[in-house]
Length: 359
Image 1 (cartoon, helix red, strand yellow):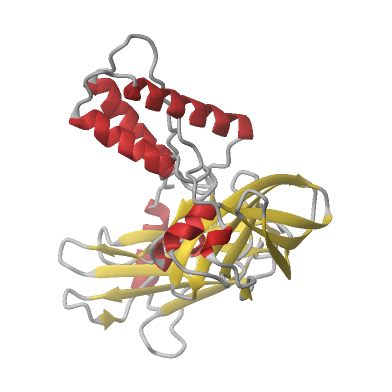
Image 2 (tube, helix red, strand yellow):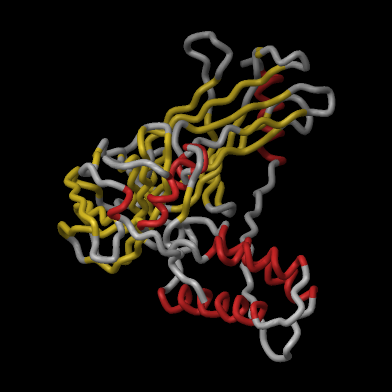
């Protein structure tokens, strides 16, 4: 790198500020008092009900809060059903609530592999930003979650207004929790494909031990305003799945999958599983949260019978993905586990055909 290029790099690094992360809180609603529900109240409830359905997997809530949300939803449902003159909006909300209560709150139907929340949680986030002149910077990491000792790979390339990759003068900062600058990173292009790369060991930087948390690699170019950041999480060890699974149909007509885990330390753990008819035909997902001690445990993951019936295909069923997280801030995660496990050959009529809740 030339002297002038080094000077530009130092100037850019000196001029960077720290990016801020803003976290939103989701409120809650209830229909109270009065015989009539106004359209404004219904519209608010409908919007909030959609918010509840789309809540992210990381929002692990105590069982009593889940029950409170469910009870309030049922109160709303009964309140609207009791109205003598229902509007089109009322009927639409009743239909939405019926779908909401078709399965237990821990179950969710998915139609495509891309909708699988485990896939979404671990999908690599490739970011591209553009300058006013049309040049672009694309950056990504090879994973979203790393354990200490893992190799972190960060990639970046610059393209011109025609979308062609070009030689780039990239500089980068490693930032911890949007507050602490850990140090600078040097990109290189060892194979000449104009995709630049940084390799580093997760959990350490220049002999200093790094705390678990969220890190950002802020990348800058020599084009004014063309910069962006890629984020990853350094996690503490969560434990892992041993690969042992078993399945059965419960007395209530649901599919019970039990997966053995080896827990590394005592704490509250959050588990997810996704069920498919085959590799490309998803049925749905379920989740569970448990307080566990260190050691081996069998974790129950239950798929509601009607969820399987609605997919319309007899077994065997594929347990496509499993994930495990320890409930901390941020969530401690390892990579998703694909056990390749198929259940016994169940028929649809072995599963319940009743909605989870019908007020």
